[in-house]
Length: 345
Image 1: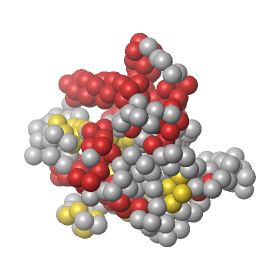
Image 2 (image 1 turned 180 degrees about the horizontal axis):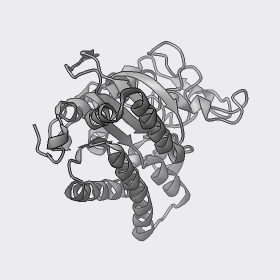
Image 3 (image 1 turned 135 degrees about the vertical axis):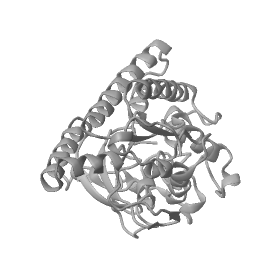
Image 4 (image 1 turned 120 degrees about the vertical axis):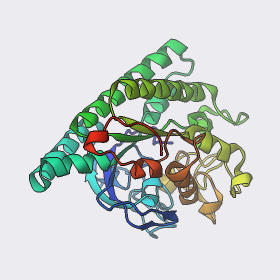
């Protein structure tokens, strides 16, 4: 999941090419993927968001992060590539959540100056807008509230959802029509969460799981409502919650040796301080990160990211749906006179 102590967002613009790693894709290169993501999708922007780079600890900028790819730290909080890295090549804009929409609007204006109004609208309409958000809000809340009421949890979900939906509406107003969402994962199953709460005898800590499932239910309802009142609004939701939970609890079924203990870190579950963290303490490091679902206490190994990326890109409707996966969204052609079409391919 996302880093508990920090809510980092970035926009990554990816131009799809004829072959993307293990994915087959013949999409026109002018179709782009705009990624609004937290630390699960952050390719290293966190390095530029610190006050003092010489003294502040930045997750992912120290060994052994990046040990699998590219062999050195890049700011990615993993041993290697992240899900967006498996979708395309990156060109990075650095920003936080309150400002990223403004940067996107500025980018759209610059595109219009260079491409003209109609071509810019075509590019924005053909592009896909991918979101991963919410996890850090719920982690921070439940770390501070050991016995929260359902009402308080719902109240926070409402605020998160309102912010997300307003952002989507603004992107839609600029020209976006195809949106993809990674729902909130099983927060209570993370090594970091179980180690912090000292709940070693359970698979997952209930209050974190409840908050994640509340968000995911609200997300499905909100997107369905948005589909009903925004002509031409098309979307896909990746069931990250169950995809990751399955790999944590049934790791060997998916080719992993370990799903509940991280490859890198300190403590009973290697749940914190991979690379030494803020305190510079000693930490453990496994021999083969590809055998672990988690690289550190809250972030996946490259192998997990690859499996998740495949599901996001080309998963069946019960995993990425209800009408589309990301590949189908890219294949969906929305010409100006067919902008109200919402039928699946």
